[in-house]
Length: 218
Length: 301
Image (tube, rainbow over all chains, first blue to last red; front, side, top):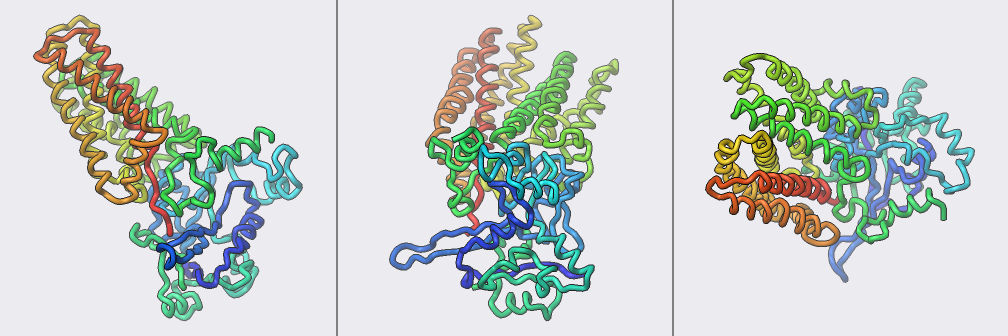
């Protein structure tokens, strides 16, 4: 069984927010909800300051703080390493949201559901279809799932996630500069492992000991 | 601009300027919102009521005071329990929270409250229920319930202000102190002046330890890390400074100190006991509010 992970090359990223938008389209996310974000910060002081661009998403941690905190077992780590939420078990206590050091979870409530992309003008056709095609349950927590639907479906068709678009997360497919690489962390010969080894991939906030499956290289 | 849009803009850019801008999210230290803002306020109240109910029950065990354990039991289960459930997004599934006691502090809390409900009821209805074994078990359960709220927060490693080692002692002493005050008032109302007067020496002791723990918490958090220091700064500056100075400084510390000094040596007075209790309750709420409201996450980059 593979363990899916991602490498993001922060030197390649041009902060186009393509990943953010592709993710919103893929999951029909309402306004204000992001499974993918791009953080832009600075380090150092003028004239030696430099800009930091970090696309962030759920890290699908091996020892996920959210999984530990969840009192119902609704949040769990799948065999392939993807941290998923079973919305039939979620009670909406938001312990996972508080526990996540990366703040990658969103509470889906009435207020979030009712937000419109064009406030006061009613929901667009896209929003209405989205609610039917990709329904979220009210009072539960939602998050990035590494596009597990695409990965699962693709694998059923014999495709390789990370190589074949139909089996690869939307944020990886859309990236115009190829800053994102998706693959199997357990396969020593995978592209993702090569990049992590060669370019000394780093995890965000490693000190929390959650073992993120998203690595950053530069 | 319609209400919907207004709400969205207000969420993103609060008019008081205190909120974090979307482009600062997790780049600057970002405040915890889920367990205090909007519906999260229920959790603040639920933790408070669970604590004071269990505190009253705990103190009543030492005096074998049945009305005290009944009221404490009711406060913990009805006020604490119901408000806890109201906070949930799917209250009908609350039973599922019993499923993961091995890793989840919330789940352990549910078990403890469940056992407390059953054994507490048995103690109430059993003649001679105040025996050593029962008292010992219920005492332990009460301490666990008192510390449950802060214990749930204490395990969140991502929020330095909640990870302080003083958080648990502070919660235990605040539960005992508030419970003691409630019990003292109940004795005062039942006209038992000798007991009320006798309890005063413990009131002074608990109060002293309570103040010490508040001081240690603030000092420890200030020196813990740069991000934790921001939490203390948020308490002392900006919008929350009024809650800190009035709620903690005056209601939790100064007024109880004055009342304690007036009643020093056991010269108690029912009205003063009531005033001190009201002040202590408001102060305890303020402390809990501040600790929950000012917790900030480490920036990601």
